Image 1 (cartoon, helix red, strand yellow):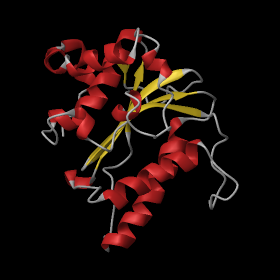
Image 2 (cartoon, one colour; image 1 turned 180 degrees about the vertical axis):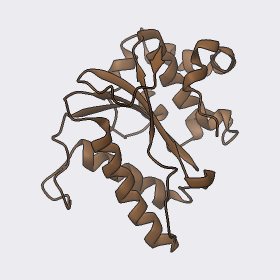
Image 3 (spheres, helix red, strand yellow; image 1 turned 45 degrees about the horizontal axis):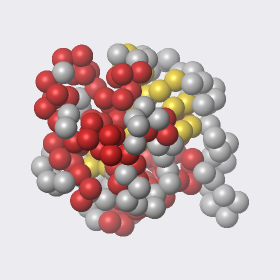
Length: 207
């Protein structure tokens, strides 16, 4: 199961991290927005010498992004913390950079995201597996696509080896399956199960 203990940070811990736009407003309007947010994720997970930062990012390897989904008004991450550096360091950098970009582009004043991100500690192996499926199902649940492989802004196509995005450590999830097809079948056959699974209510984001 998961626990909402924001003071509980530790190396080797898994977290479901999510946030939405302030007042439920959209935070992504076009491909440029999604790509900029993904760029900031990449730069902070895998910093390079030519990346420009006001302050140094966490050392490479501090976090493992396992799966993600960017939706028009919110995002979901499944992350493993690999060191004693807390997830707040990573998320605050990504969201602050994106907020500066967003406010400048759209001449927006004020908060872009609704306060601090929310985080659930994942301390159950089965829960971790279901959570990854739920994150990938978001575009379908929201009615944005009929087929999950039609959605560009999640890690699902990468899991199925249909894209070239290498942000995620997919094997943390895929090692549980005999092959990719078995993983795909689990994700796409579990929509109603996840919606009705009482022990997963805590992770379902009411947007």
